[in-house]
Length: 323
Length: 218
Image (cartoon, rainbow over the protein chains, first blue to last red):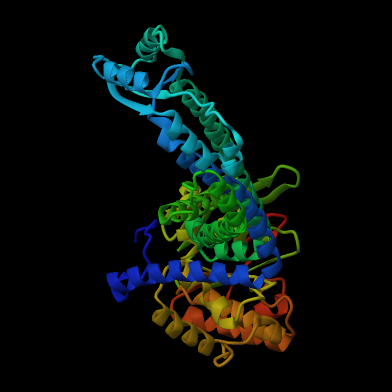
């Protein structure tokens, strides 16, 4: 007889299909009985799930915030255009001539002239000052020429050299490299992203510890059961299985509640954000969790929770020995 | 089937619990283990059930040296045993069915097989029809028989019982002992620790007597 055979002893009466079926039954039983146990211990389960859900919703909420901000800055990220503000005494006509001249420059891909009138129209439309600007007798806005350098000038230094060159033109009042503030915004976004990542790691660790502690208490409550199971020949993996499933359910349900929490918060914020967005150009649409985000959120929270359970079981289960 | 070869067990703070114990139980043999309290009966059973390791000597169970069994193999050794305790060690929040089925569940049997065997085992101990009850609704004697049903359901090669009649009146005790005899008759080896000398001597089986950790010649 094989001493460490994993199969039931009477192999001749138990076929392979029955054994694999039994294996699935054991898993299904552990899956649903651990859920049933959570439901029966309603108060404890709800408390744990709320704490975990708040933790997870903080992390996922910040993630969504960054995603929304990225959407806001996405349009300008690629831009490294130069704006030339012409002197106020330069007529639109002279501006047109200059623009045509600049088009010949080998480093320039695109030239757009924004006349004083067009600048005024756009400013009226987007600034929110509207009719108030009609009071002005003279249009104070300068003619602007927007220049998009060729892609060959990928280096910031080369673009800056071009800008210095353009600055010397007699018609130009001053030149501004848009890339500089884009760069500043980008680096701010990077700090924010990194901050959110660190926060997520920290909160993920919290989820791990919360599940671990819940499982530790559960293990204490079911100490007798573990002892008897060990005495009748249960393996380590058999005993830890229901606890791991408990961890899974805690993580999964917390993830679900966290998703609902964040969605409700966004729904509450939607109106004010839309109003704010309308005051600008209205191009901003609040983005919610996509399907892939939800799947990722649930997978991550379940995984962290199972890991927390696993770590605790690894250290505590061996200490429970029949004496 | 079970062979103790110069086995000693020393506890760091309590001294020798077993000293130089040697005996041999053949397949299908039934024996009683007796002695004053603290003589080492429980320690001897715990060594067989792998709840303790002996300090010296060797224990052979079904040809396997228990000193060489790794932590991972312990469950598979225990599946060959049917353990019965004075305090039953039943799970009070589970039905009789679930309690008795436990050894089969942990061994990975299918539900149909489990159902069939649980009924057979409960029938054997005279508790058929009580599957859905909870242990606390049964009498002490019935609870002990649930424990016995759980111990035999895995068709063990060796039944170990630690004071199985400790909490029972003489009539129930005799009943339980006769139950063990029935298992012995179908080839199971049975070792019962008990201090109920009157009952044991009536039954006419081999008696191993421990005295301060040493086996007295019988």
